[in-house]
Length: 255
Image 1 (cartoon, helix red, strand yellow):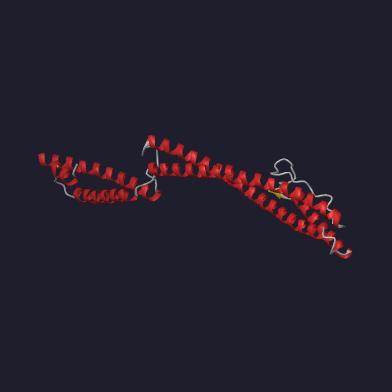
Image 2 (cartoon, one colour; image 1 turned 90 degrees about the vertical axis):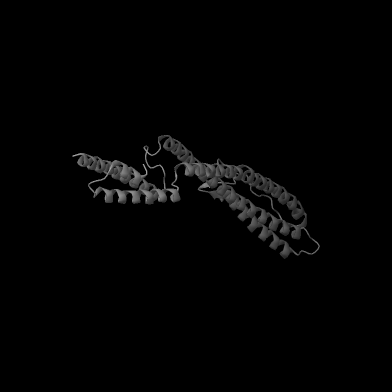
């Protein structure tokens, strides 16, 4: 009778151990499959709260980063638009310098200079009026524009005297373009790109902190899984024996 009681107690202890081991196996498998140490509030209530707060901030940072990147894209686009205008002014000035050389220009040559200048002026003014980003004008001074570029007028290369005056007007337009280019470029570099760098560093730090808190340590978790699996198999094997002492069970499990 005494032996039977001991056998019953031993079997009951093994059954409890098996249930506990299966629960540990489920937890280890969940962590290994998800890559997360915290998969429910029961795993680590305080850690879960901290993790969710960190993930919420990371989500907000991702949106802020996307917004800044979109702004940088706009400034880059406008920067290229302004550079194209500057190239057209350079070409126009070359024409004006050539047209101002009255000692070598015939009437046909002067007319050719004027025709080329007219074409450039039309392209320049059209580019200023039509330049846009995401459906909004960028160079005409309207709401949302990054610059207010004036249209070119009075570009007259019909004779050397007017061509010489036109050079001054082209140079004035070039100074306006250079100022706009400086403003757009400095805003992109010193404001937007600096802000983007700060946001990305903050996100990187928070991701690392959240990962350290909530991600699975695969080496440790796999070791736990194998150890629990071995204990479970041993428990099932021990359960098949009817007569075991409580001390023998404890000795086997090290508990």
